[in-house]
Length: 503
Image (cartoon, rainbow, N blue to C red):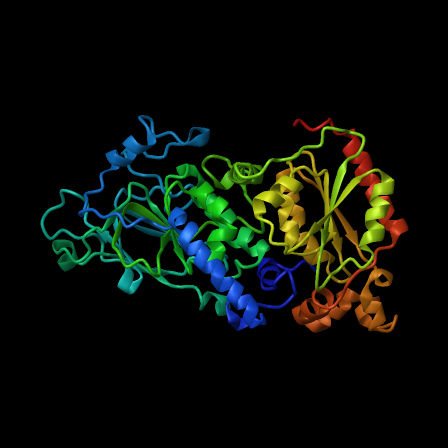
């Protein structure tokens, strides 16, 4: 049975372990030398890269946020991409791009939360929004020209901005943000006088959770963030919880692609930041999913690929295949678990079929921009199920193919993670399901053991624990070259039928 999003997501796709109560963080086993190197890297980042991403120490007085200021910033018509207005007929900033949302038509001054989604909560604040670092709160001040002692609705919301709200142990480690109206005393005083004035709304998101894993970084964080703010055309300020130098270095291109503004380290920046609105939390359409009918501008997963291309190709030259004779195939080379034990023989087989073959090493320290350049040039990306296959998002829509090797007992999970995303990307999806004779589990279990003979029955009895421990975390594969060759020849023929890729 195909697990639902909850059971699919609870596992770390790299090693099959559940996040449990660790909040997705793994216990470090690094030697002291590696910690020392990390410390040096941190110092280097602080000196070189931090000024690029962190908000500068500019200051300013308190400000009345007028809708007309946003209108001037977005141009006379306030038009977004695909013809969607960034301001409504009353001049109010359009924060919520979700069709049918209870917050899509919120007033120009107020707080609205949409908690209807199983995976995520999203809140919106329209008006004069100010940070209160001491309480990790966003305060909504009365509108300009309001009567003395005027207040907004006496309303308070709490939200943990991460897209796995059903996973209680994990969410307990996500910082909670309070959204409330300023009290009359606060509104009448200089207690929260603006230190930094922004002309764009804030998006509050987190770098925590499982985002150290590539699949979760895209599925839980950056794809939802893009869904939530792409209609603002980079005129948004990212206010990030659990901000850290590794996150900034690994995903700096995506951060810059989402926002034209420096990032705010929300936990450590003690200044009062003032915005003309705020979004707290992000939208989620499903596993690596974008549903056009849910967005006002009919966005697709291919549009997210284009966003990645814009973010990464500024820093890397994208190679294209200009020959129809030798299609390109990349094999993801895993380490640790779910290793392809006869990888060299598989590569040789693919070459004999007619592919130009490249081996794609994982965790090799290469920047994602470099990996985007390599993978976007491929006709076929192949690999055993794991987080690195998230890079299907780098493949060319309408042309490339993903060949996922599903180890014994893993086919439903494998298909659930990536098949639908390929369909949305118009990337051809092929899945090769490993049989018992190709699994390293045959060296640990007798041929008639239920683990080998009937994985579905074994999983019904052992639950997710046996899937994670045995099938995801406890086996490698050695592919039957004759059987796998049939799949390769099928994909090679498909690649030859496609027109030559444009450079």
